[in-house]
Image (tube, rainbow, N blue to C red; front, side, top):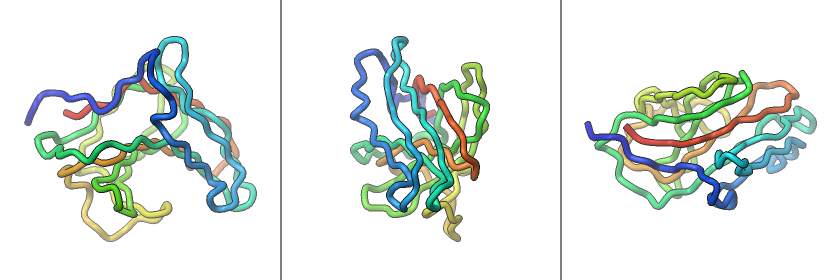
Length: 164
């Protein structure tokens, strides 16, 4: 295995437009999420999840030029949350419809989460698929999603996403 490599590190000069918000309004929902950079230079994914109109999720994603990552075995993410459950997701190809997902509970303190590739499960529109877990061969997209099945405000502060 190789050393640590950075995928994305937020800083005061980060343009939040490098990340795309996908709210459940794509399916008629009323949830509202946004991504901003705070004064400390961290990314802040925040908003409100609404269950109205069959809603229930907010997602923020970052597309990457497809890159080989087979010399690594896990993601290392530094973040601070609100105590709620989120999922980290990734795709290995630009045109891949499903994502690989890993659920985690956030802490109100800064934490470092290590996510082994082999523990990321394939999902499509919230449904688990009968496919192998993430191989960790290529990476084309990273994302965070909140989808807890309740009406709730949320806030996830992200410092960095790295490979190990």
